[in-house]
Each structure stands twice: as structure tokens, then as C-alpha cells.
Image 1 (cartoon, rainbow, N blue to C red):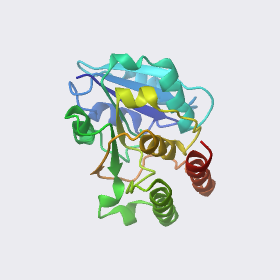
Image 2 (image 1 turned 90 degrees about the horizontal axis):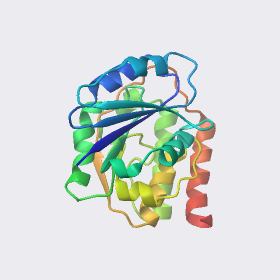
Image 3 (image 1 turned 60 degrees about the vertical axis):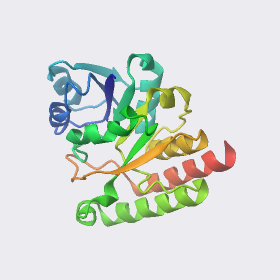
Image 4 (image 1 turned 45 degrees about the horizontal axis):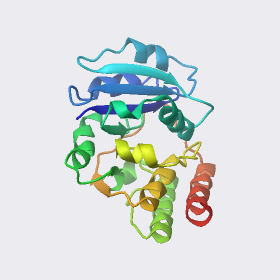
Length: 228
């Protein structure tokens, strides 16, 4: 089965090469960098990266925000080309070498969506800022209450999807509410969700997450379960 990796980027010049270099191939056949109009050297560095037996594509997203990067990918990319898709942040917080673990449940037909659980990492409290840690815990709790399913880590940036999942879901999130949108869509359409432990490291570069994004993510949850 063919595997495609998706990397949303915005000013990740300090990390993008390391991420691409560590994506395992020939396990991954294609890498798509969806860039949010970076004003640093992210795109130039990505263009110079080369992988044996693995194609690298650069795509410029519509508008701003991580959710818009994902929407751009769904709109521009031919999903029929690959069977399994994996998405991770390009800031070195997630280990590309764990992609095998992320896609295995889908390859084995045990799941349609796989979510990486950062809170399994015993060092998470030392790595993640306290406000971010608490915010994640609160949002995960609300997601469990409203969706009747415990996502463990609803704001995780490490996901894998089946082709059928991506073809059926409706993504309206424009920013960091993307992950909540993905989870609620998986629950709403009764897709099989698998949660697996992942490692987590301090990011390279500037943190783009702000406190206001917590309210944005919560509003996405409420809209998905109460309005849509």
C-alpha cells in the first residue's frame, strides 16, 4: 500500500530538513509540504531535500492557518494516489521514525484514523508549557464529554488517515481548531479510531500557539456537536 506524509509548515527553516531526512522510506512514498507563505527559508530548504525512492512536493496553501493548510491539501491533492496518509508538525516535536507505528493500524485494517497520544510520555510536563498542558487536558475532557469518546489527546499534531476517511470528512477549521475538527468528524461518521503512545520533544523555532486558540478550539467542538 502507498503512503503519503503531509507536513504543514510556517517558518520552520530550523527543523524542516531534519523532519524530511528522518521520514522513513521506502515506507513513505511521497511527502507533501503545504506551506503557509513562510517568510523564512522553509520552502527553499524543502526544495533542496532529496529522498531515495520518495517524491517531495511543495504546495502553497490558501489563506492562513493550519486548518487552511489541510483544506488546501484536500482540495489540490488527488487522494486516489495513496492508500494511507500521515500528518505531523514540522517543528521537531514529533518523531518521524514513529510513522510506522502510526500507520500500522490502518495498514492492518484495524482503524480508519490513528491519533498519537503525547501524554503517554513521562516527560510531557517538563516539555510542554504549563498553560498548554492544562489547556490540552481541559479540551480533551470536553471532547470526551460531548462526543462520548475519550480521545486522550485531542490536540495532538500526529495523525494518520485512511483514504476513505479523507474523502468523506468535512473540514471547516481554518487554524489550530483543525485537530478538534478531525476528531469530531471521525466520531460523527463512526470511523474506527485508534490511539497510540508517541514521544514528544521541545519544538524548534517560535511557538505559534496562543491562549486565544484554546477558545477557538472549544468553539469548534461546540459548533461540530451542537450546530452541524
